[in-house]
Image (cartoon, rainbow, N blue to C red; front, side, top):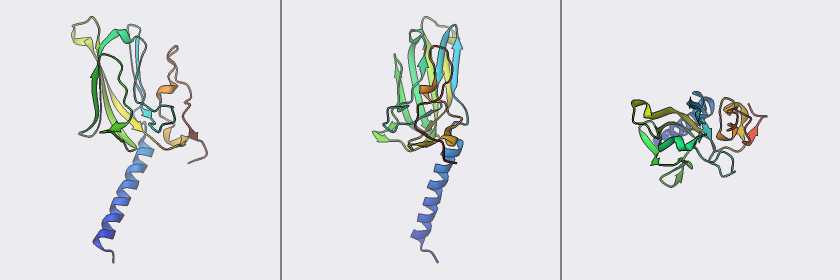
Length: 173
């Protein structure tokens, strides 16, 4: 039969492949998030590709009136494991690095908290939660990200969602 080492190796390989397939099948299941109030628009994509091609390499969000918020906090995690946590007075970006190392392809949770300027009421905080799909394959199979919304798709002038400039493979299944 198989040795314990061979068996463990097979189990580990299966678990890796199953997890990788899960990321590809479930990518962008929850959809992008947006917030609109008093002419302030916030848009958070649900996918990014930190692969160094210059397109959607960072996870960030769009605010049409950044002066409307005085504090930004972005938390990214996988389950109870923290991948990124930053608070600042300006827009925050995440480059996909965890402790200086490139993160693996995965589906991660995020929480974006924004504090409105000039308010002290209970509604001074805007909180958006969702999932972000981190993909690094190039080209990305178009069918695997068909429901994804990347930051480059968001038209700041109209709020429309346009086709992505991401390198997609339309011949894959």
